[in-house]
Amino acid sequence: MTNKITYEFPLNERIRVFIRLEQLFKQFNHFATGVSVWDKRAALNVLLDIMSIFSRNDLKSELLKELDRQGKALSRLSHSQGVDIEKLDQLLKSVSQISKNLYASSGKIGVHVMESDLFQSIAQRSSIPGGTCSFDLPEFHYWLEQDESIRLKDLQQWSIPFNDIRNAIDLTLNLIRNSSHDRQESATAGFFQISLDRSQPYQLLKVSLDKQLCYFAEISGGKHRCTIRFMEPSHDEKRPVQSRDDVPFTLSCCQFG
Image (cartoon, rainbow, N blue to C red; front, top):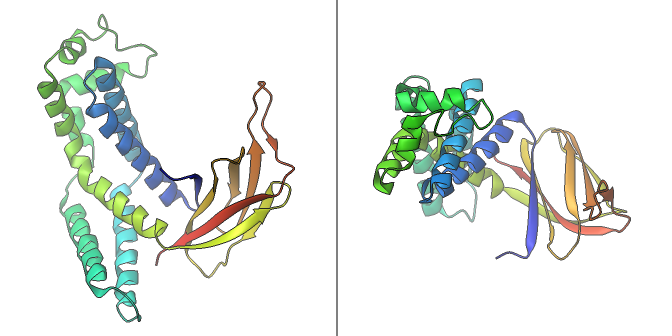
């Protein structure tokens, strides 16, 4: 286990959506494999959140653009000295295969889930606080009491069409996170400001600090300038306050392409 806490700050809306989906997919996997009724309820609630994001964004198009950009960036690296050609070739093949899978997928992603009458009923009632009780949705109550193999099979069936998107997001974010330029910094009286080179396609900031330091990082700004404030958590129901101490941390500016 690492002895650091890392805070990420996306510098554009595309990466912001990708990170939100990454978190939701991880939550879905966690709850889907849980065996209790509450795990299955939580898994379905997460799946509804995932579908909500897909309904508002053209994620397939955004991911294909990002993968194309990253594929070109990887190809340029092949002419650089000291590059692991074998590893680079594996990454290029992964980008190519995932892109092909996305191109091959037809229709709007997530629509298939609503073909299930059960899922439609759950989606309609979920907008009502506590609206999926047994007396509201007896069919859902029946499903929740079925054998684990049946429930897991249904969850997998509903989530399979999202797999290509998830793989694309995982690869994209992994390339961006691992392309960071790290440097040690110090926030004077808990405050630090950074101006980003506009000629560089920065997509993500990472702020890492030792877990033993009793601060959390509050990051704001945009793709040209960001402000980092290190705040002291409140222990008496008051609002957190900015630290008066100089806080050492690692700043990572991530770009790929």
